[in-house]
Length: 313
Image 1 (cartoon, rainbow, N blue to C red):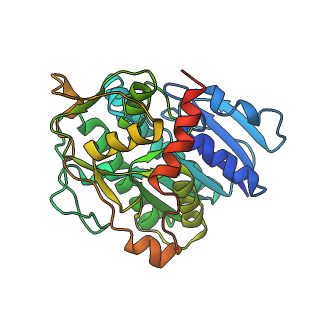
Image 2 (image 1 turned 90 degrees about the horizontal axis):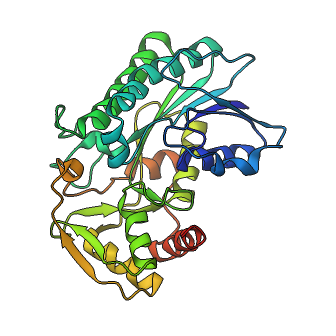
């Protein structure tokens, strides 16, 4: 296949490029580098099957030649990023989705959109199945990301129903691993950086809010299987092993061997406004349709991630 991957210089986009190239496909990577990093794909330059185009997908996309699949992964993804870039976040979810799915339609290509567990908002159902419509504050500070993703799903299904585009929607739950940005504000790099530098691990609130962490390689496998499947409706890809943020902080301390203390803080900015209190995927559908479930346990994944960050501090 020849595939276009937007957000190619980002954490997940770069790993997707690696996977498709490893499977023998040709990859066109596209990124405007608002949060992406060329270091993530530097090893791919010189590969005759990889081509990179610096471009903002919220603007019209022209791409010569045939395409078999478009994977739209361009978007700020951490609260710090989308609070700093609220309008570009909404544009890439709306205009960016329109441009990428329009390209897929024109090329007769499959279209896969990277959605998120944030479409469920601060859920009142736990775990969250794909049939749950969510509990989202559309005018809160996080709404720029949550609603952009919800809109992108609606756009994707409209093109599928009206134009017959062969679409896929992956709802991604908390994912971590090498190539995350050290200071992107998310809990995994935050805790690892603090533990490795001897700083207190700052836990927001009482630390009892829950998350479900999956290692990036499990997610990439799920996405690859989803693209090859015939499933057009959304599919959750995440780890159903739910732990509190406090338990996660303790796991980071254990794996790093750090003597850092845990410090409870109450931010006064928008980082925790509408922050989900629980987060756990129901992966019944992924098991049934994709024969997929996560394989990497938290301790193993953390060890690999910590090793990566140790080389960058």
